[in-house]
Length: 65
Image (cartoon, rainbow, N blue to C red; front, side):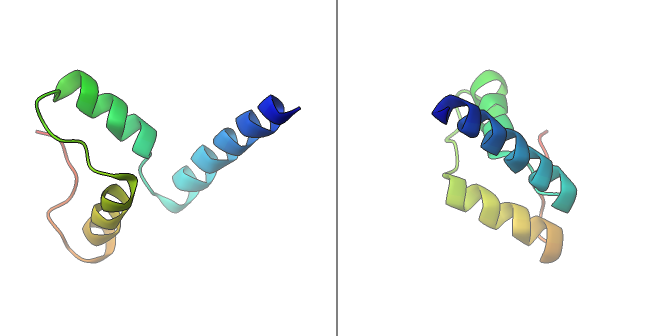
């Protein structure tokens, strides 16, 4: 039962992130590990702070390459 709830939460979390245009932290971590293993991975808090700044604050963005 707990496993089903966890899966439902993960799916809804992804859906909500897509709905409001927030990038996925899990995908970011996966990308960094495979494409940029030499770079430090941001914490979840730092990641979302940068994402919000890039979206609303006119920051440099979180684009790769």
